[in-house]
Length: 167
Image 1 (cartoon, rainbow, N blue to C red):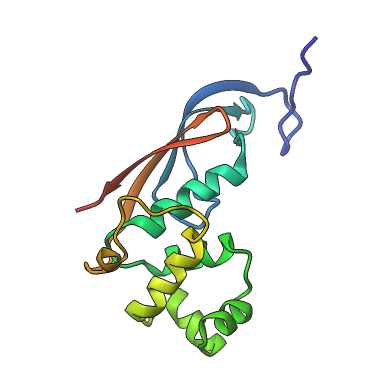
Image 2 (cartoon, rainbow, N blue to C red; image 1 turned 90 degrees about the vertical axis):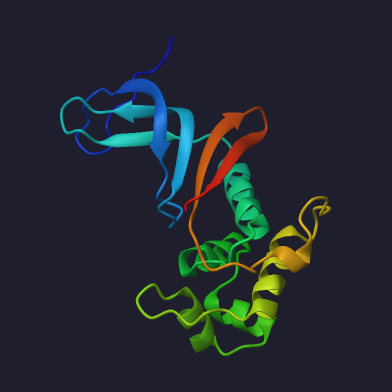
């Protein structure tokens, strides 16, 4: 017998629906998870997404960012650093810069652009264990920063992704 899940805010039994879900918990504002289960509270309106294989989802997002042709945006740099499991100071030590510089790379109010060589290093840190087949490193980060819209759908053992560059 299935257990009725209750709202984490008000305790009311929730309804589960399959739908597309804007996944902003990643720190990125352009991620949509396709056709996942979302719990809805009919009383208070609380929504809770049931996200399968969260680690695989973050890996898919990280690889999509590392493989995009456009320069990385500050929020994307932060996501990739966190994906790698590094604090700002640990990341700074790995890439050979001051921790304040990392903070400026990730700042959305007054960002300091990451140098092309440093950005390549970050991308390599994300993808180094995965063979690169169709993403020549020379083409990474050659265009102006732009956001990419990602739609991800759960599949067995991971996530399928579609990446669309916002023009």
